[in-house]
Image (cartoon, rainbow, N blue to C red; front, side, top):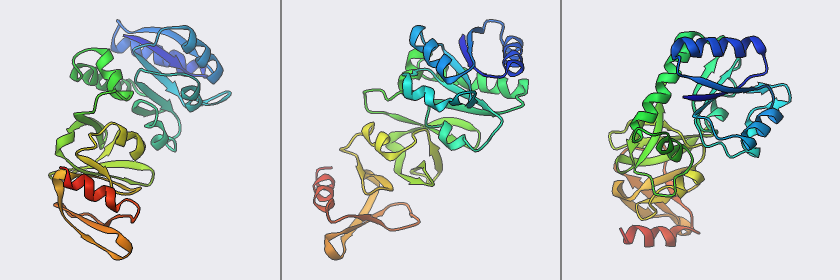
Length: 251
């Protein structure tokens, strides 16, 4: 496994290298980049690694800026002393978020998670990176997080998606709630079959197979009821009511 480390503190970098070697001697550290600028230059000149271990606060800014300048197609494990970036980190191909000081056990579990995901997705790295980076085909499974673990949920088993506090959640047919890997509904919408899923409003994407009934409201709005209970009424706006009726009628 080829790993790139992005870390501006030499002791932290040396500790990561030592711990990685103790976990798996076959892990090869390709380089260490100690700034946003150095990371961008390295990534633009070299092949993508299999995995990046990336600190968030670097000497010249947040490492999230690297993603704005480079097309990173590999998974990332963020390493930081701060928990305030957790939500934002999962917008950038993150598969784990480790708080410093990083113990060997925490790092080992993160590496195991990467290997498990890699193995699950057809046992090759390209399948994993395709999944993380918006594969052109409509998704059959959604990567989700529940607690500290990642898993997948079949798209057909998804009743609805919703956003709350800038996070995207999935609720399956058993009314189990998961945090989705995607950071916003718009990106997720592009990957779903629009014959089955409908963007009801800014907060909800619903599955036609789980629509129980709907009724008209004042000003040509529509209220949609799903087979599962939802904490609030799902309202289709006047502007979208015609497209919703057409969509639901074609299912």
